[in-house]
Length: 191
Image (tube, rainbow, N blue to C red; front, side, top):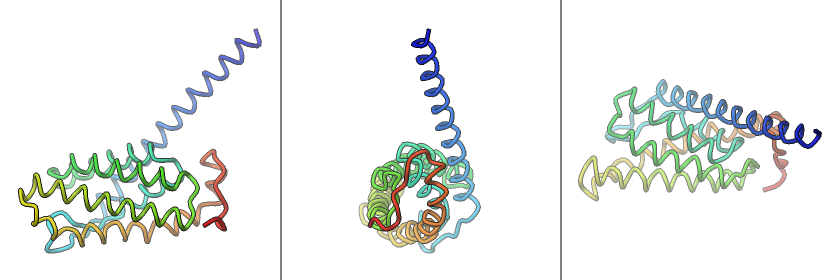
């Protein structure tokens, strides 16, 4: 009978974790969508470049809840924002590119945010953003390999703006997240 109780407890615990993971994903999808939708500053003369703060919850989710959560919530949240704010053409690229950005950021930081891990993750995400949107725009927006270069500064500013806001937030909540995220976070002195 004790063995059956242990099996039931393990199954219940796994189901509870899945529900919690789904809830976290849903919350971050909504936050990313809202943060992307409601603060948008177009960077002229670029077509696709705008500054928004949707990358802040994306980076936060990746840093503390991992790459899978950030990939799903980031890709879906920003894709929904594109669909709801007139950037419909970009929605498929956003789903894929931002999903990859979230995954890579989360894998690099590995729920242990340090200065060096965050800097490496930001550099990787910037490269993914620039390459992903450049290729998408060259193939589908401009049908020209040179034209998307005009959007590189805007996309760069977008990622760096998100990083400048997100990194201090990530470090500010680090003591709380040690207990909340379910996994011990390394101390700040590890660089």
